[in-house]
Length: 208
Image 1 (cartoon, one colour):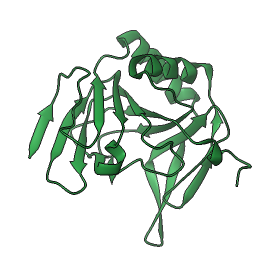
Image 2 (cartoon, rainbow, N blue to C red):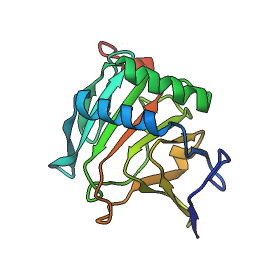
Image 3 (cartoon, rainbow, N blue to C red):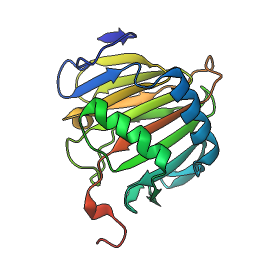
Image 4 (cartoon, rainbow, N blue to C red):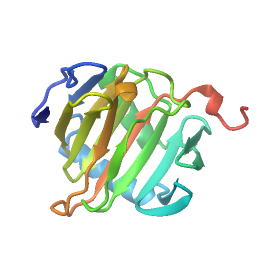
């Protein structure tokens, strides 16, 4: 079963097993331009290193990890220690919190240079993330397709993420659904993605 969404309000997009709300115009065109320029130039971007089945891959896509505390984020055989939030990241976080009604203390950023860079099927279900908490994804730059796929049933959902949009994934979404950013040769522009999340204090540096 395939569903297509484009112009959406804040109603739940998922038919069951989770909650996903979409805010297509969370940021104004002026804010989009300002934040994209700042994030492009001043964030400490680095290529991601991923280990899969004993092999190491270096991605073209670049990433960065920021938080209110020096949280350690572990995934795909790697670990990153968070850099402190800048005032600009705090401003973006405040807007996200106003829209979602949730609170966040960390942000994983991705820089996609063009449509040939994407992200395969996965769930953001690491144990370091507070259970059932909101994960809020901000999109700046090129419009990209985003997909959901239920882990055990046939349902799939596609939507287009506007520049300046916010996607709020919460409750059991990460337990029952996978999501992906498919590659597309038609997309030539860059996209910056910020995923705000609530990390457990146990993943702070110095904690066992």
